[in-house]
Length: 401
Length: 224
Image 1 (spheres, rainbow over the protein chains, first blue to last red):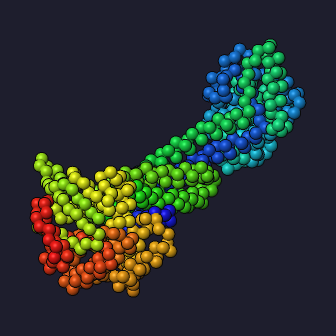
Image 2: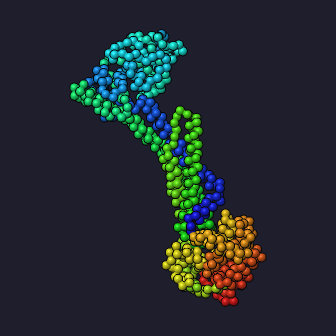
Image 3: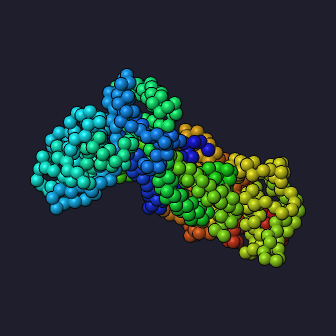
């Protein structure tokens, strides 16, 4: 039998029972669409997180005290060294070539109050360069004034949420807030920042680093952020910074340097796995579709026993019967893959329309994998019915026994 | 053309066996016109199925055109069915989704003949049964007699040497039945070997050779 006649015959059989074909194709299509849409959500989440982190700038080098294997672990657990990161370290790093800015950072929790309103806030101690290294946007007023690193001053920049909760609609600029036992004057309010690097800056208060050290009574720094002039300088600056800090720490290499790229690639990995597992869950619906295809094909074979017997009597070998029925299942898989891809695409567009800030995007591999799985399911689950047809006894099939 | 020697076909039924054909010896020459008669269960349909290579004998020898069919594999048997044997069934067995023309062309399609060859041969076969103007009707738009004529065109489109008809008039009124038998006899006159299984003594009597089966054995073999 010629290839085109194979197709024509299988297609004719499918179109002869339109409703059945339509329904079973729909089952396959829903499976494919589920893979496409769920993968788009997983991929969207990945893009969203990557976007969050790349806002920080890929020219950033982060110095952590202590030597850890990788940049993971919750903050605080890395303080395993005898020597802390200090303001002297930060000052020394500022003198390295190709460094645009260096921000020391100390972090702690503190009670903040203004008049009758009080709450807990994250207190960040840094300096004027922090605006640059963390890409902060000001809502009102100014960021911290440029000061010597050792110079304390009772000024504070507060996050959007803090400003609203402490001062309501009134302007906080020039007002005094109490941080722990000391009073600070509000010089600026951050624009809405959202969460980045695990810190919700909308609920943070930022003061000069020397003031923070005095408040916490702790000269140790939590991090030092280094922004290099361009991405290409990252490796050389990383090397120079490591050498410098080792020298300052009496020859012991007791700091960890992570680049934004390392953080990003870790998250990239995590969300890649997440997307895959979500796609895997969706693939279960494809499996279900495959079983439906098998069921429908089995019913079809037993309904068309006489036809199979006739084809055999007309000289069709059982291999040909097998191919014809397998081709029907494959065509269903193919139609399901096409319809499902379109359906999934439509679903993704609807989600994108409904949540414009969330980047949904189906990677090409997801379409290919879904379509491939649908075809595979058709093939796999079409095999049993096709084999059953091919093994029919022509005499019994013809007489309907 | 056909030689059967000590040919038996035994079906297991539960604990016992049914001897549908019991040590049958039979010789048929090319161009013969034979009626196979006998009561229900006498083995006439089984004999027809064995002759048509749809069924395999349990014992004995079946030679078709000098070849022992015993050693043939499934593919070779299918090829012989395709090229040498035509079937006509009581219930027509037309594919309802195909037009009369496509039903007739189906054996050629299965055999992988190129389209232009198929068109020509199917048109000829349809013309031979007088249904050229019904070529594009589907089976449900045809009368019983017309359907059986389409089936005959399908059985002969490959120009087989042997035509096997199992109760070809069983589902037809007497006038259509008459037409169908007339058509089959015409084909026999053209040289095809014709074997008709029938219940109807009038139709059986028209054949030049009448074989009567009883309990799987040939009870009577009579040249008219």
